[in-house]
Length: 510
Image (tube, rainbow, N blue to C red; front, side, top):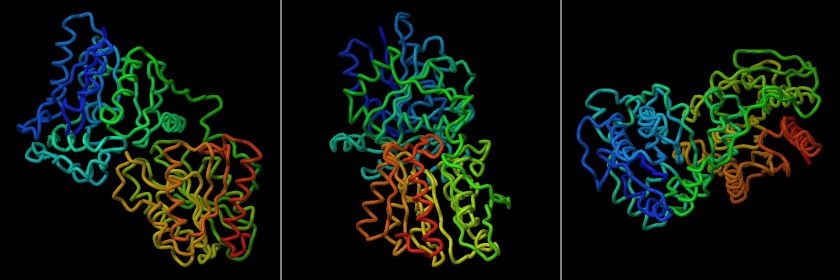
């Protein structure tokens, strides 16, 4: 018999599993919920000293109780924060665990506290300094009814269920977030399944794309023992889709699920394959974190500053300014008579948008100050996750900004990025863009969660009368310039380049 052990996340207790547990039992499985110290029960009182080790002990007690019979296949399910005590306990009872299910949760790592997975960036920064004993014994108040989206999308949760979630929410002991997780490595071979909630901003396709970027920390996700499922809902599927979640958990226990494709080391990651067009051989100069691609011209020329996406791991090599897709654009810009500028910025984590935006602003000023650049004729071109940085320039376009371009961009923070209250919301900032021309390259095979941000942006732009020219690539994927080597793709790139350069030079793009 399969026995599911269900571990809840921040502010929540065993009550959130009520429907799912009943359905698992009706399907012939066992279901056991873990009462985490200080979190279970309405407005549970929190005793001093509750930390991650306390919750690991809570999970271990249930594992030992269930495993005492010896005839049960244990599947350990951790939701949200709950994956941290779940993995910590599994590391100490690896021989008893048949599978670990990460339910819309992160990847716990040895030595890293659960705070690193908290979606709210400002809260992470605030709590990061709470390392003293007095503060670590404190609590984080539970969200008010309207504050739950800060912790994950509430899409699909019925109003009554959200009311109950709020009424039964408990303060989170700070020690559970601040104490580093300690792992011996014993949990490594245990099969795992990730259940991704697409309404919260994560999908199998997005994870596959991140794996292709070459982050060594994500390579283990291509192991055949790792599977994935998607649920079309927000962060609380046990409240929004309990029947569908039950089915997925049973299938995960049976070893089903999607497997990621490993990186083809011979072909190389998609973003490091050749650009889809021949590009001119133009001079390149490296100045700090900025590369200039220079046209054959005597007088100052307009410039196009290319801003890569991300997050990109800090140790990724080559860095984005040497990626063929981006250098291809920069060389084409220079070949057509303008200065192509390509920079590396420090968007290595979802909490890095502030410093990445500062890097971009500093690079733009350095480019404008170069004597070979006409500082009054500059275009900015944002790619992928770098699209959020465009909000600064849409919100207050300077007079010298002749055009803003975005290619397969993210134009509103995804729900689980913890940026809902930040300034990095182009779909909101476009209301202040005024007469600034915008050129947007949209791919037809975009990841749905990113495509939704593009449509949100276009709707907002239409409402406020912003001039947006959309260049469509109907059969293109995210990063199409090095993976979709088609005439359709080449036509789109040429169209976008021509339009951006027309605006930069002050020519009529029509």
